[in-house]
Image (tube, rainbow, N blue to C red; front, side, top):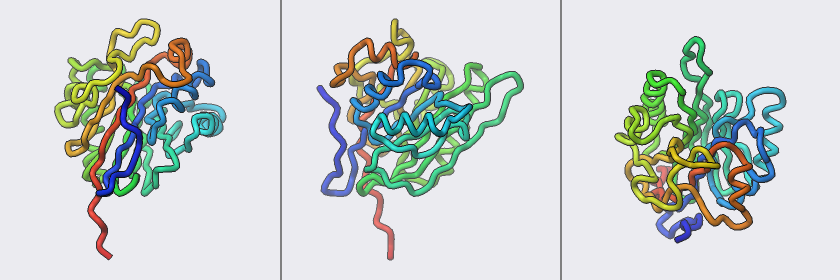
Length: 252
């Protein structure tokens, strides 16, 4: 069953498509990568491992253009997480957050934004958590704190967790947020590696009150082959369809 298309409902609520994707610094087949993203028809793309070094802004802009999207925020300023969006999205504010650095480990960060789509208002966060267990768990707590500080009723967060659903960090997030795949499974499950997917280490989460219409690894994308999914990067994407309630109207 295909995921619902993006649309705005008569009551102002919005059905949106959210894609989370680790692009491995665009070191692989960027044409295949763009084909995958376009075929998913996302409103929001939560990217991990965006280019961070020489001419990284041009690389991010090039990916957005080839994917028929625009850059929202993130990249090197968030230590790798990046947000892309469609022209359906109205941006209210953005903030790139650098997390505490553990000596000897990679710098990590969050790309965040508050956006409006149709009549809905939504916080958005892309993350790439640590390979080290204790730091990863601390970063999961910081993610939850960041969502709370965004002062939004509804939010979506996702990324490469470097953890499986039975792991401490993944479970911490799933205990406070809806794990889209667990709530409404759709498509495939495992995201790593594309050649032999055995582990689900990438996920899309939503706050309570957001309706999950389906979430998982997309299959049978129009114009995309299995070879494209294997060539694009070293993770499989996670695509979610969500219904976000309309925000209360502002008082004039």
